[in-house]
Image (cartoon, rainbow, N blue to C red; front, side):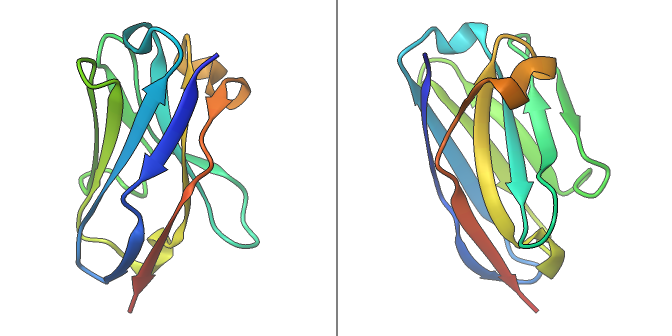
Length: 119
């Protein structure tokens, strides 16, 4: 079982940047795929970005070119660098871990961190 703790959320103006971190404990981090999801009030949860254990990445169309997911296996941490933030990026952001990307929704999840982007 993997325990995940997100950090780095906060309030930022449109056009600004934030970097989210997700620290993992309890399992072999390097063998897991990792993902960032978000859920805004009244909306469905969506996959924002994912990274495989081989460091292949994929992104939601809405964040391509603005967000970057990366991982540091030595630190058991996955990051989400968010640039050029927009008000529509406002949501609770969650980190998830699973053996493969396709299984992330059924894997281990963190408690979430709030990101609020003001206009």
